[in-house]
Image 1: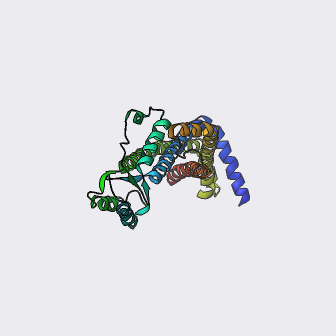
Image 2: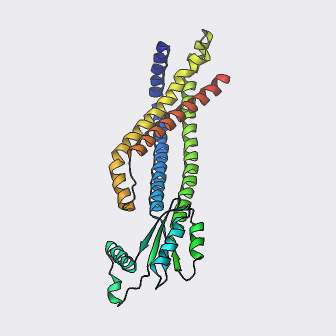
Image 3: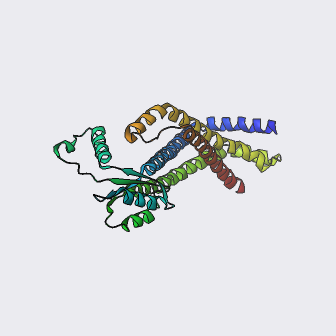
Length: 296
């Protein structure tokens, strides 16, 4: 078995060298496809990380009417906190709301407009965090059922919904593009192996006449396809490794505090996916080509 594998690998390397122009074309196309695949995974993972981060920050703000007694505020806080979808309820006084606004303006590098106002325009609020940001209808209904207590409701769910829509569209479009490029890679590998088969047709016929099995003939060509995929995957991973630091810096610059970039988990996912896709496409393309040839 070991001798057969060694023989098949030697024949595979010889075949790649004989058809080096087609081999280079197949490897380059494979690298382009794998880079597209890795880019899609990086972008979608980044957007999902951003979505998770934004969801963790999503809250419902209930603006309270002026002049409410503390007992009435506490009653509403207990009522909202009893809803299963609510993880926490925090009371924010008028002064705290004003200070929050000022800090946001400072962080954004904008002027503090409240210095031109002679009074505090912000009402007291309840900050409501949810277990699942998508399950907000019961909380909104409970707040709407308190007329005269809650004067306004501020929701951030629209931001989450937009990001979910963008992520979904990007995933579908990316998969469609990858499907087309993957099909192109598969056809190029099939053609590369077919040319190798045609160039060795006399040799294959002699092997068949002396009793060589189809498996004995098939495996060196399948190894050729696997080697094309393995070389393409290796080149792709080397390029990604070289670009990992700039990509992480760019992602940090774009996303700010959102935790995106090359984490250990993402790096392992990319490595496994690139290797599996490269070796899988190479092996399948070669198997299809040899199978069709031997059937003739």
